[in-house]
Figure (tube, one colour):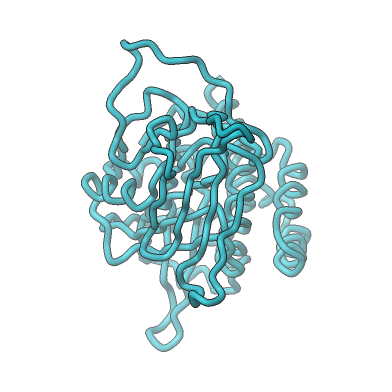
Amino acid sequence: MTENLTALINGSPEQETTEETVPTEDSVVERPAWAVHLQSVPEIGHTFIEFARHEYHFQQVKDPSGVDTGKFTVFYRDLAIPEDRRKWQTMKGLLSGMYVVANVEEFFRNLQEQIQTVGAPHISGSSFTLTCDAATSTDISIFDDEAVRLAFEMVTGIESASFQNVRSKIHATIMNSYDGSKSISLDYTSSTTVGTADNPRKLRDYFILTNHSQHFNHITHSLGAVAADLTNVQQYFISDISILKNHTAGIDIHVEQIAKRFRKEPKARFVSLWENLPAQNRNMLFLLVFASQILSENYSVNQHKDLRQYIEGAVEKVFATENV
């Protein structure tokens, strides 16, 4: 895991990805197998399929004279839709030829060489965003801290005593957008199953380990291989919880910003939970637990993307303040 993160570079799909200097010979390194530079794409374009379902096509754009503009448009279609109803969707805006396409399925295979995953990954996709969530063989205890038990009790209604001696599975959660947002992210998340075999309840944490997320930038010429390490994840979790549960600065702004990223019904539940939370518990830890579990219960890729983008920036500032 990394402790000093490269901030997520926000991009707009309605703007061209053009701001980049031409690399020198010394700065160019061998690209990993999961990265394809658009400058190397032939005239027929670049087509690939993610996890046997999500098909993408990157096509060069020519001007009316037939001259290559150096720009690309992106198309997507869902192969799970019957062929007679299947249509290509077109991305708004264009990409610069400097853009590097990241293939999540190849990225995941590269990741598997470093951390042992368990079972098949869970794939969620929208038109131009894809997540790949894979459980690993690494399990940790996230409920040793009383604050974590209480936060999950409040958001789930499950008595905190049920969390005693329960282990949680660490997941590698990969998210990528194919629309010019410029980076593929690797988050470390967790899942926990509590209750009886007849009535299991699944709990998810997407955000407590946000400070250890990694980004692989699509438009840099030093794009390297995936580097993941779960050796110290338990220690990271303990130390991060200690910081998050003591951070209250700007919490009302964070609550407002997170609430508006939920759809109507999840938003109402999130706001109600927070308004009924005792003042002494209104901290960053409770906020992240509430956001995680409500997202899990009402999951959508776009909602996840929007939430993690905001939360990552907020968490980065929390830890930057701690390190001053």
